[in-house]
Image (cartoon, rainbow, N blue to C red; front, side, top):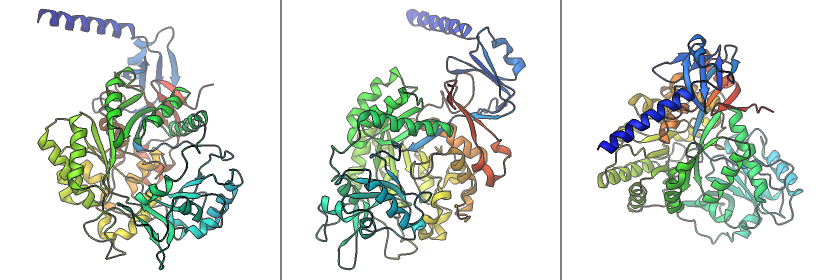
Length: 555
């Protein structure tokens, strides 16, 4: 006991020496309007930074004592500063130059507003790549195009290349005849478990693929048909720099392989210093355990310890499993999950027993209820405080579901994409809209909500996502579920503290307070005093990670 006391006293002494040595700030930002997110000091006008962390907050007179010979003083000119935004569920994509053969066609409405636009884009891409190489695209929206494309539409673009264009949800895709042939799909093919091939009246596949059917076709793309590693790293770097430009300082990468982890880490180290929390896919559970044990070397930049798995389907793709039918099809309840309750229980129990965090994709109320049964079973079998198991999306709920979420102390990462995808909610029926993406109800009951974009399902632009949480209004101007409108403060907290809490890092980031990481964003307007319908127009002027300005880059 005497040795332990001596060690503790020594630790306190060394810590006090460290604090005194760090009392000369490297950077002091003053003449600012800072929303700290910290209840103790919610507002201040100056921030002192040292060794990548917040040294102190207050006004400039209070912080003058930290000015040393090497201290850099920055006048913020009354601009507004918030904690850096945390996107708690995203799928970063390598972004290749459009003239590259590896470029993935952007089939979203900004680039392909009509089917003719999509066909023209495929024709342009076909000129760039060798015959037989796959042409990939992503982001089409049938509600904007007027309908889902078919294999016949894509055949007009090319018949010399297999073509696969993914829906904005990521859970549907459409392919051309060459891709179907390459995958061996015909009228005789059976629907896979957890998925379906859309068919015409004669039973022939139309080219529209749902859920697991997408994977059957995607796997026909030869493994060797991939870009060189240095190009992939550069393309990830482009993606991360775009995130930083929007004020995102941390990202929870949902559903990833160890190989992709290495590529993203390389992109980070080559000039895109965004902090990354990796949710490895369920088939890499053993690797996740190993990586968690070794993460202490650089846990501030690269965090492990979470497993992403699917139990359910898509909200915007309209395949999620519901307890009552879709409004437009009284005989349709969505596509049931491929996994049984027993197998779900066993998998989550294994994740739980290893000390990892389960992050489970579930959208329909029927899927979510099964997941809650699994969490309830696991926590009864092996009680664990502060587990912070998560539900990713949790789109269609009931009061009973919300009560169970609170009782189980789960963290939820719901969608906030009404702006882009409100029209996908139409087929669920108006009676459901106030029970979809229930951010407000969950926040009000005390559940921690982690703000996210689910990029590329919706844009990784936190101010647009915050706008969405506050307004619940589609790009066409229609409000979906007004009872779920959040306050500006609640919305910002979801994209700062909420994301930090969801990765066990609320003691290190998510607020601007002494000892916290100096991750901050500078805005051109005050979100708290901006008209609700103008929140999306607020621009990011600067982004700081660890007290270093990373956007705009300093030459």
